[in-house]
Image 1 (cartoon, helix red, strand yellow):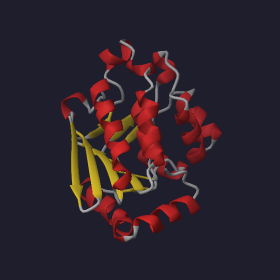
Image 2 (cartoon, rainbow, N blue to C red; image 1 turned 60 degrees about the vertical axis):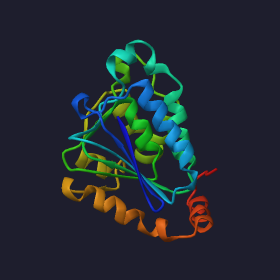
Image 3 (cartoon, one colour; image 1 turned 45 degrees about the horizontal axis):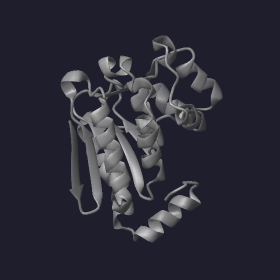
Image 4 (cartoon, rainbow, N blue to C red; image 1 turned 180 degrees about the vertical axis):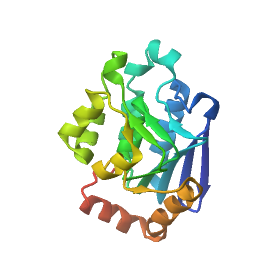
Length: 206
């Protein structure tokens, strides 16, 4: 349910459970975290999904059984955030719930125009993972973070672009090509130069 394609330093990770809106099981999250921890030698990493939804968040049955409060979410987002290479979330559709954490941890987020963004933890009776509100507020500000987390609002792709939650809107047929184009300079650069520029841009790598 997780596909990994490596192409000369460019790693493309695809959530591949489209029949369940790419909802995440504990096994999928553990595999994703392992890939992110292994990707220290990658030149760039693209995270995307199969089908029309990026991810609906946690698998509901597993969420009720304890996955919603598991530390594997923080393990995954932390591993992505620490990568010295450029990381890009290519959001092929709606991004919901705990799945937002991995996208927030990426350096860049691009999305299709009909994507929606929401994180209904308050309604479901769970706390968000600790780093998610911090990263969200750094992108969209505290008031809009409350709009998403406390007011439970669904955000359109156009609003997400205006807020700074996503960096570019891309038509579905061009999403992966755009992500690869954004990754091209990082893939061509020497790893120490890429990591040095990442640090100068305020990224805590390593």
